[in-house]
Amino acid sequence: MEKIRGLLLKDLFVFKNYRKNIIFSMIVFVMVILLGSLSYDMVFTGITLFLLVFGLNSLSTFSYDENSEVDKYLLSLPLTRKEVVVGKYLFAFLNSFLILILGFIISVGSSTIVSGRIIDISKVLKNSMLLFTAVSYLLCINIPCIYKWGMEKGRMQAAILPVFIVFALGVIYFTLMILFPNIFNDSFLKMIYDISFILCIILNILMYYISFMISFNIYQNKDL
Amino acid sequence: MYNLEVEHLEKNYDDFKLDDINIKLPKGKIIGLIGENGSGKTTTIKAILNLINIDKGSIKIFNKDYKDVSHEDIGVVLDDSFFSNVLKIDDINILMKHFYKRWDEILFYKYVEEYKLPRDVSIKKFSSGMKMKLKVICALCHKAHLLILDEATNGLDPVFRYEILDLFSKFVENKDNSIFISSHITSDLEHIADYIIFIDNGKIILDIKKKELFKRFGIVDVDIEDFKNIDNSYYLKYLKYKDIYKLLIDDKDKFLEKYSNYKIKEINIEELMLMFLKGESEHGKD
Image (cartoon, rainbow over all chains, first blue to last red; front, side, top):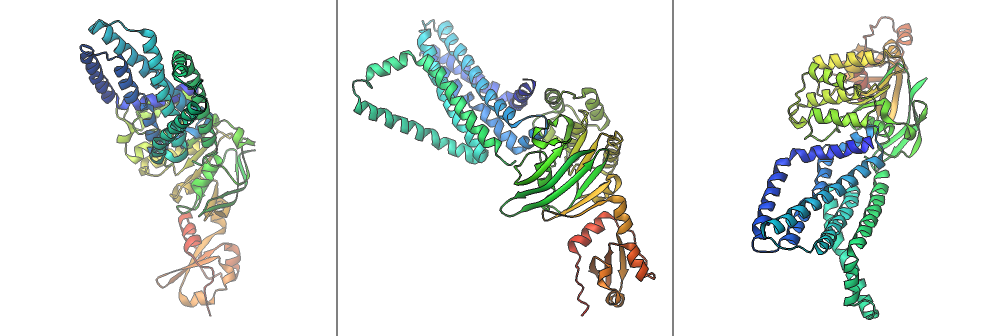
């Protein structure tokens, strides 16, 4: 655990390097959310903004690692390949999760305090979890691609892959809708939405597990 | 007995092959690995550190298979790899405390002070020499028993090089410790190495005790007439330089027995490397 903590700190120190940019961007977003809350319901927009802009930030640490060929050095220390990959996933997860919480607090807080709106917390939680799952989905595709092809090529591959997967899933769902219209209809979607919070948690665990196993297998056999 | 044993190591790339590498590094000794750029020095080190998958052979560190050995007891300097450039010295100290059980923070900062490394700037602002100093310090501050150093004296000024070489010599005063160091600054190895391994094009072409090397090898400068008269079985290679022929003698006693009127000059490792790489073995006397 001590070593994993060290790996998390390693990436945190990289973040520290551009903390001014992060803090400045966050202040701008908070201002936008606060001002927007005066006229509109900014809860969902606020959380979306935070997650999309900051939730994928952890991927930039790969770039810093690549520039200094950090991985070679890390593996010359008493660290295993598994620990290095676990460190990266944990950092990506914790970063997006903390951003979700921050976005949630700021957006909900500004809506309730500034505009005095009554928030449907259950709906906000469900939507937040859906957004968080979308970010996890992007992370879980990006990380193995970066391990496989490196930062530059990997990010390009990872930009195309999610679209194909979503398209494929869409095709499957519409096919099912045509084949079994009594099952796959609006009430099915509503039922899915009702249990989406739990479904998202399960989906997150599955995606992270599968993605981790793919990345670990790539990294295990990689010549550095 | 040995801190590092490499047997019949092979690694194939499309355009390069590391072929039948054998290394035995006894405790208390230093092996210097020399060779041109691209000769396979770094690939050998990467294989030892399990950074690349090997195709054949075996590697043992501290008498255990290299894949089962924790790097807790190994100090490493890699020429082209370190922590991210945006980190500062204090960040690195914190990380090392997490990674090494025996990280000696006091010793680390003692070296940092001694070698005047600035703590308030990120290492991207360091000169290449300062960065190398930091890498060497990191390798020395966790009570390792084996140092694996890839071009660890690169970019260092002569004074610090001298100090570092002194540190390395002191390191092996503990008879449990050993150093495997690759360098193209051959004079460094002349000072500290007990054994010299010369690698060329992925193959070891010379593996010898340093003392034996200086005892056996030498250089004889001759003119064209003498060159024609000397039997080519008495020297290993020759190199024509202006009107002078430099002959690489690999058995001084044998040569002097036959040609006692010639003076054999002492050779240094750089000359030896040059003769091996650029010298010719057929002199075409016909």
